Length: 279
Length: 187
Image 1 (cartoon, chains in turn yellow, green):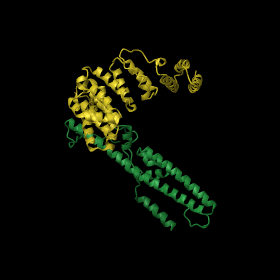
Image 2 (cartoon, helix red, strand yellow):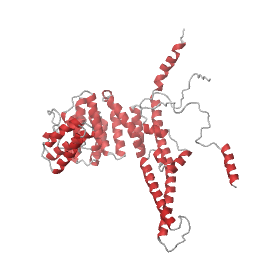
Image 3 (cartoon, helix red, strand yellow):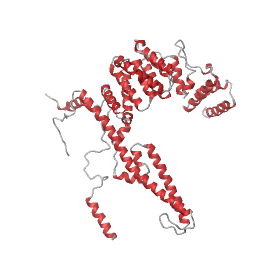
Image 4 (cartoon, each protein chain N blue to C red):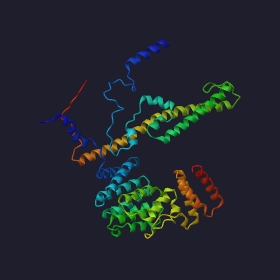
């Protein structure tokens, strides 16, 4: 005998899958990217960028599935084209580099050398560095292990020293943590220095990609005096801004031991006063 | 004459249905009804799709400079219009007060032709009035166009993608699904 009491439950169970408004599939995203790239309309491309980035996050989340799929490679290639068309060479190059390192594809490799080099030159890289990026990310030189390729991608991405791609490198760093990988010591340093707001130009001499290095960044051991003082100042500023006064106080004591000029002393004095007001 | 005009307006109000008055019977409460949102839809897109350029906005745009552009999420132009209109109000006040001291008005004929400054104040006043009206019409017309353009772009994008999703699922976009039964319950 059919019980009327369970009728609402049956209706809900039957209709629930249709009620969910899911994200679009990668095939759809590729088709749309292809469609708008061909139209060369920057307004349409700009309008679609947030959706494409969302789709990219989806790929990254299901990375084990997509690493053997051509769709991820094609998607990133099309997304790179989109960025190229809206005059964002930094993002275009980074998307192409991700495709080359994480989702290598023979056809795209043959097709994209000229585009890759073009994006490199648009980012003011010289021929030697552009060739270095291309050679390092060549399919036949990549490791068979996805995690090793991800580390390579991180190295190349940080070596490009482009401010615009910082959030996307951090996104890849989170992916490393999500995959429970061993985080290289240099990446932790890079993440910290980016967090405190150090410029790319100042990052260059500090980051040491040596694999044997372990442990965190010790500001006092930075060889370049000018940058060392800068890192102290920026760190203090960061911790005061985030209301971490106890840590800022400890840092101020370490900073005080360094040789300072009158401007740095004055700056430290003001910062110490601000810290003391909260301790 | 005034009586006739007043009576005409009163009579007119009996026949016309203004856009911003709810004359239809409301079946559901719009504020409670929760729409289904696609995962890819951003808040900005959702807000743009649910906004329309209505008659009341013409009045709001008069009071708040750049209102239509703010509504269409064109904040930069909105702030430019706001600043431009504020400057024009300032210019108008400056011109009006200076001319008043001299016993002149912005649009009247110049009585004292010897004072060359009066002409300058008049130009400032006329320019300010032009900016006020110009910025208002620009805000209303351009803002409306921008809103519609943005809505078209969002509809174009999701139209394409939803159609693709239907095709991928083996469902032809022309075939619509209708419920097999319908129950209505009325008090």
